[in-house]
Every structure is written in C-alpha cells, then in structure tokens.
Length: 479
Image (tube, rainbow, N blue to C red):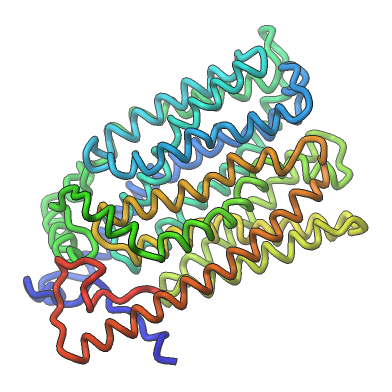
C-alpha cells in the first residue's frame, strides 16, 4: 500500500547544502552514542526518581500509611489524584519555558523542589498536610517529562525519537521495580521514632536531591555546547542541527501565531483525548498495582511488593523491543494499537469476577506490555508530526495536560472502597482503552489524507522549503 512509503528523513539534502556528503556517518554514529550515554542517562535518572517519588504512595499505603495519617473513606484516593491538579496545569507552561529559562536551570530547580517535598512527606501528620504537599509536588515535577521529550526533539532526528524516549520511559519501569525492592527494605525499618513508610520517603528524597548537582553540571542547554564533546564532535553536531532545521530551528523565536496554528490542527485534539485513555492505564497500574497484586491472595505486604518487580521488568523489556522496531520501520500507529489491544485483553480478564489467581496475574502482565509503550509512542507520534519548536511544545504540552488529567481522576475511579479487585475501575479502563484505539484510527486517517495532499503538491512541482516546518510539502507525516 503506498501509504507505507517511509517519510523522507531530515537527513536528506536541503537548499542550504548537500549535508549527506559533508557528514562522516561513522563519526556521526559515535557522536550519537555519546549523546545517548550522557543525555539519556541523565534524563532516565530524572524520570526514574521523579516517577518514584510521585508513585511511591502506593507502596506506602501497604505499610500503615493510611492508618498513621487517619485517612478515611476515599481520602487516600484523593491524595493520589490531587498531585495531578497542578501537574497538568504546569506542563504546557514548562514546555514553552524550556527555551526561555534554559533546560539546565529548569530541570535542576525542579529536581531540588520535588526532592525537598518528598522528604517533607515523611513528616505530614494528617490529610490536610498530605494534600498540600502533594499539590506542590505536582507543580515541581511537572517540568520533567515535557522538557525531556522536547529536548530529545531538539537534539535528535525524527527517526531517532522513539528509541530515545524508549530508553527514558524504560527507567520508569525500572523505577517501578526499584521502588518495590526499596520499599521492601525501607518499610521494614522502625527506628528513631519513625515508621517504615517515613524512612522510605526520606531516603528516596535524599537520593533525588543528590541528582540535582549532576544535572546542573552535566546537562547542556544545547547539545552542541556539551562539555563532554570535543571540538570536532561539536562541529559535526552543528552540521546535524543545520541539516535538521526543517524539524527544529534553534534560532526560532516565540510567536503567538504558532500557538494559533497548533490550535487549528485537528491532530492535537484527537491525540489529546486519546492520551487521556492511554494514561488511564499508566496511572491506574503504577499507583494501584501493589493493591491489585495483594488482592490476588498474597496477604503479605512483602510478597505483594516483590511481585510487582517481574511485572515492571516485563513492561521494560517489551517496551525496548517495540520502541526499537518502531524507529526502524518509522511507524507509530500499528504499535500503538497493538499494545492497547494487549491492555484491553488484560483488563477484560481482571474484570471477570470468577477469574483464577493465575489468570489475573497473567492479566497484569498483559496490561504492563502497554503501560509505557502506549504513553511514549503517542507522544513520539505527536512530536514527529508537529514541526516548529513552539508548535510542537504547545501540542505535546496540551496532549500531556489532557492525558495527565487521568491521573487526577484515577483516585476517584479506583476507589479505596472497591479494593483490591477495583471492578468499577477495570470497567472504566476497558472503555477508555477502546476509545483510544478508535481515536488512533481517526488520527491515522488524518495523516494519511495529509500525506496524499503533500505528495500531490510535490508531483505538481512544490519546492522543499524547510522554513515552512510541518507545512512544507516535503515534510511527510509519520503513520
């Protein structure tokens, strides 16, 4: 089918010169590997620790957390959800601020703020104090994911996004496994008048704080300025960035017309609503997995925490494979639909009252396959198909704003009173997953129609004008 023709890579010749002949591709691969080692490692650790400090409330709840704070009814669910009230509001703001405030400063300050709030959580005494800390935590952590995803689009080519985001999101899976192991050890502590869950928050907050100076020293505002590159590597990266101007132009300045252009793009709304359904899985599973697994019959807190580890490991491995293949074939939608079907099967099994323990544990693995792949690939797809820094920044910020609203709602859908089977929540997740699959199909139709129109313009003699960004006829959308 002709729509499977691969969109031209930004590495093609442009009007400003024949970059293919001027770049040493062997040296380029070495530089990209060096970028991965330095950038992705920092981003992965930022995501790992921010995700851990946000979602560790699930492990805390297994160890006397709710009892110590005298939480009643669905106050625990409210505490889970409220962090996203500020999270979703600030994400688009941080997206726009990234170039203005600089990545180094923005991400360092975010890391310091959320670390302090994580430590502070150990000393809350009641529901009101917990809510206050969680609201501030959402505002502090909201910078990390949008800034990481945008930075990747500033430093890499379009056909390199998925693998790099795969690496970063895999750290989130590692965070789940690491969090379970850490909680297993720390929540057993009873010393200095503090309970185990308090020690968990203190230690995890200190670990996060230690990352802040590393980010400030090692993260460059532009990859071509990195202290870990020599002069020849910086020169090569300068050529790479010039070659990639049709996707990202470092000289672009903020214009309100770019925001208006984004608001007129139907892809924004389709992917944003789809992301809400996708993030239902992300927040439901990462927050409530310990309780869901405990509901399989493992009454021991230790068993429930440790049994989350292989689930997260499976999520990480499957996601690495999917992300790698997606970049190789330059396709997003088939993989998105595939992993969401896996989630759907898992939810259906979990929603059947008479399902055996073994089948339910298998179902958790099925949901985990789509846990990170769906979230990341939907954002990668948007990043690939919106060009112009501020249009892309606004689009991905709005998609994440709508998607992360699922986090704000999830605590009121997976109610504490319905634990550990959460049947109402499972039914909601089934509906949201079906909705997302349908909307992915709608978005696919939009980009296919857009590519047909652009190919027609190319056939009629339209010239390649990178300055037009995604309105350039030669900028073909990824499917």
